Image (cartoon, rainbow, N blue to C red; front, side, top):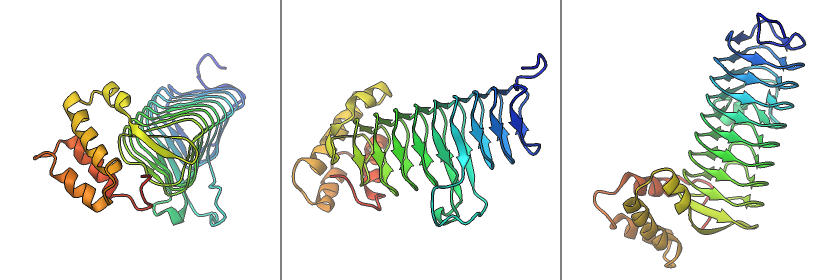
Amino acid sequence: MSKLSKIHSTAIIHQSCDIDPSVEIGAYSIIGKNVSIDENTVIGPHVVITSDCEIGKDNKIYQFSSISEIPQDKKYNGERCKLIIGSGNTIREYCTINRGTEAGGNSITRVGDNNWIMAYVHIAHDCIIGNNNIMSNATSLAGHVEMGNNIVLAGYVLVHQFCRIGDYSFVGMNTSITMDIPAYIKVAADPARVIGLNTVGMSRNNISDDSITIIKKAYKLIYKKGYKLEDALRRVDRLEKPARPELQAFIDSINSSERGLLR
């Protein structure tokens, strides 16, 4: 590595790239065309960032990761597509994150801020990932998956395409997700089943005890009383006026489901 540069002499970087001078790029990494990398991001050795990618500030991408490769989708026909990664993310060894597709609506795969993405994680085309999530080793998201914020996916979790995973939820190890998971819900086993509320995660993220109590009441109405969903939601609506924003987030995550709820 040159004394005047943080880019290793063996790295290959396309002339179209826009890379901040503070960025560090390790040995034998390859950065393709139309890639921008913002301040203080560190790209480890043997990383490939194929093309058409925006990477924000203060990220760390570890060795042997494949970033912004074309979608693993037979419908993809070479159209322009993109990957956008925010700031403060940790992306560990051998992760694969693919670009979007035209069929996805906006041709973008998006990863937000401050996510902890462990080794061998796969994020497929057109996924939308929020902020402050943990994705443990060998977790895989199929295409068009949407994740909210402050979610924990334990190791070897598989998520079917087009599923949505709500804020503050938790998915246990070796779980296969085929339906939407509302906010705050804890899921485990294979086939997946709801096992409760992620009260530990809620407390750790400074959700008040009063809000947790009202969400517990809503959870019991929807999951424990045997009501039809429409009837359960009407009963939830009568719990508290005006509703707490955390309770409303729970209700919204249920009402916005398109694939169907895990219930």
